[in-house]
Length: 255
Ligand code: PEP
Image (cartoon, rainbow, N blue to C red):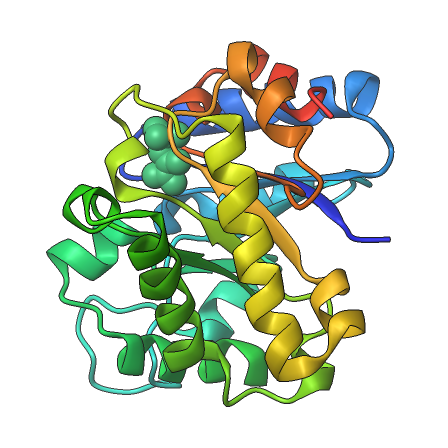
């Protein structure tokens, strides 16, 4: 049985007070309404993690994620946030390789491999993002599959089968992020199946079947149900719709 996960990515949104209100609402609604087999994660701005961490501390099904971490453990890296700092405020997860980090901060597959290692060494669970740009998708589905699988090979395939077991990957086509243009449920399922096949070729079917593959890109209450119905879709990474508690929890209920 794979873990079902719905993770919000607040990005650079919400003041501290607004974030605390949103997090409290999510915790309360998740307690009343979330299916018991779904893990709900909020990827908050780093500056909110301590306060939100306290709000989710006693929630059985809600956890928090950082949106990035440094590849270094500690030291003279102004503005960066270390894995031990993230752990110290109660976060269990870290989103790595989001396309906005890849694009605006030039994060390469190699740097992301190092970040994955640093996170895992601190017992922080990566939510590893991959996805192709529109120009790549327009070259054909097979080109897109290869591009995404190459990202995974470059950043993850040095890991052992044990570490890869229960790993979390988020497939986020860049052309669908924040654009309102969702991949169709079929497009999402086909890519997720390719990702799982690629993992199986390296690690075997049992490991591949344990990996949770989330879909991200303009996912909302109106389309989550159809997307999550895909046999290889194990949940979502949600940007815009995670900023409103009702929408976010309605997505959580969409399995
Ligand atoms: C994201 O950035 O991870 C994302 C999926 O954003 P949105 O849901 O707003 O497209």
